[in-house]
Image (cartoon, rainbow, N blue to C red; front, side):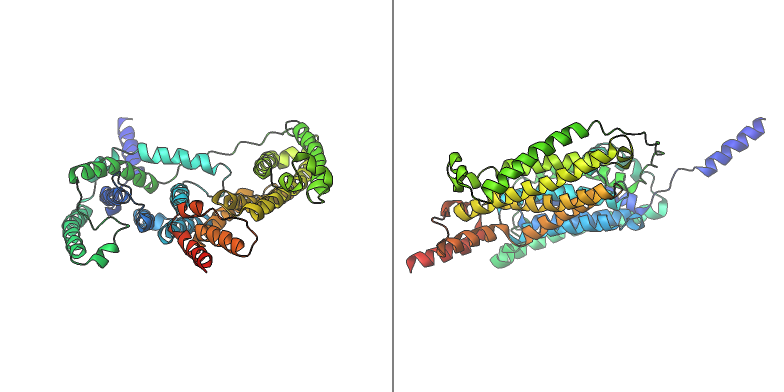
Length: 454
């Protein structure tokens, strides 16, 4: 019996041995140090300017590192490639255009899309999931904080052959970094034009406080290494799906029916007074003021309606008691919401014609376009509940946001206001506001000054 037990134990050890490490595992701490150094180069607390090209360089370096760590494990699906392309496009827009407002928003957008792309490439997440936002946040915290001690354990477990490769690579980088830094500083000191090429990357100046910069890099690097080790691991096996229980329509039917009744009355008012221009609208401050108000509230309402339909759309619920009535109520709600969205767009159009374009109004138009496509996706999901509507909605929102940024939103705003003013459609141009948007508006302001001088 003892002999049989020993054999069983040995067989068990052979079946599940400790996984051997590769040179990629040993190189992760070094890659994390490089990413941490590039991050603090771009976003150092003592920087007074925005790292325009530095943001793009950091995004590129991030994905190069991720792909190098994953190797053949990388999963090149449509969603992961799309998110990578979106992150690179937003980083490129940060480099090309110099709007502070859009730079801040794009940094947050890049942070999310890059994390989503990373987890999609590693197989830990699917971009088309309905819970993609909370899942990305949860996975990010898990990745950054749960593998902090692994770099130290990994270096002692690298096989002898790969250990020599890792040591050689580490020595090569340690030699290359100071030599490259010294050469770049010398060339930047010798030629001002060459130095200007590296303003966005902050490579042309010697560090004023090298010790603090090294400390910042060493503090950030373990968290980045933890995240890289996390994506190297295979995702956990999915839990077996539980059988779906019958779902009742009673939770969504009353509120949907009440909203339909209210929206029918609201849409009647819009058709008669807003689109028809009835004189009774003067009771609310005149037809023009009546038409140019309330668009932000209407956009919020469309978000509420869209969320209600997406949460309530389920084949099991439609097949139960009251399911057909609920599906009809949802369809009516989507149709009425489309009228409300058009009402918001009509009001915004009149408002822009009267007061010009601004960042907030441009973002509202972007949101309306996203909502319009989302309503179509929700309608299709209503007909086919298995349809992945979130994939369409999120993909269109990211694609339209990238397109908007690559077209130069600040330049578009400034050109529109100046052109409308010169054509006599606008009574005044807020030059202080346009100038505060950034250098991208200076071309339109220059045209305005030339027209005033003439």
